[in-house]
Each structure stands twice: as structure tokens, then as C-alpha cells.
Image 1: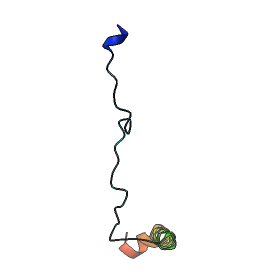
Image 2 (image 1 turned 120 degrees about the vertical axis):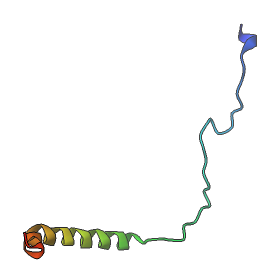
Image 3 (image 1 turned 30 degrees about the horizontal axis):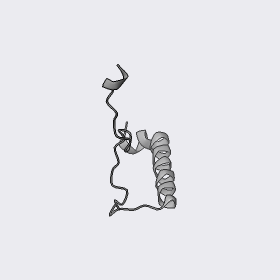
Length: 57
């Protein structure tokens, strides 16, 4: 029974590798992302506080 076993190659173990050398044309520094988040939070706070008056509701 043990002679009927099929052994699989020990390559990458079924894991899929994507291109490690891929370089995006658009790159952001971490500081830019933090600044963008702060700006979005400030806009949301202003809209939450004064949005009704601005829109006229």
C-alpha cells in the first residue's frame, strides 16, 4: 500500500508568488497618507458640526 503513494515535488508548496519586482507608478510617502487622513477627519468634523447650516437644512 505504501508503494502506491504519489509524492509531490517540494517546490513552493502550493503558494502563489506574484511579481516581487513590481513597481507602482504612483507612490505615496507615509507622511502624505497621515496628512491626508488628518485633512479628511477635519473636513468630516466641520461637516458634522456645520453641515446643516452650510446645506441649509
